[in-house]
Image 1 (cartoon, rainbow, N blue to C red):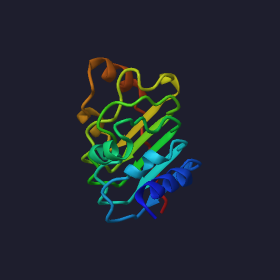
Image 2: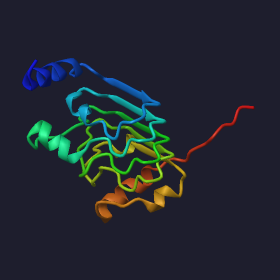
Image 3: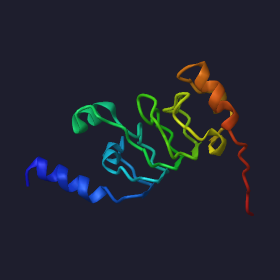
Image 4: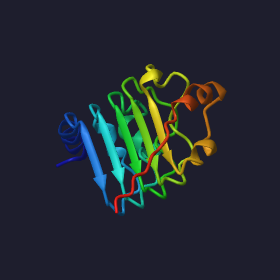
Length: 162
């Protein structure tokens, strides 16, 4: 099978994918293949210690000839215990459906792929991060973006069951 057939097969197979949960998946550095899941609604990546970025810029440009607008249908992005995650996407993205971003235990994550126009329904949107001090360490695209999203941070309550 040649590479173009494989590319078409990949696109066809992932087109209907709406939920992706990746747990304890070691030895992967990125999830650039998610570019081929345009109908993704829920993305949960947990305990995958080697993940450094969700979408790799160089791979994305090579795979899509530079036209990349992933996560157009994404509603929930949940990232947990990804100690090497530094990047979700290299530039701000439009997220017309996004309702929640949670990042727990992603100590190297310093920037979210947001700008002031990324989330149209800001009143229905929330961000949760642990440790909560990470909220103050985030780098923002600009002051307008920071002012728009800071009120979206929600308090995280941890329950311990003994």
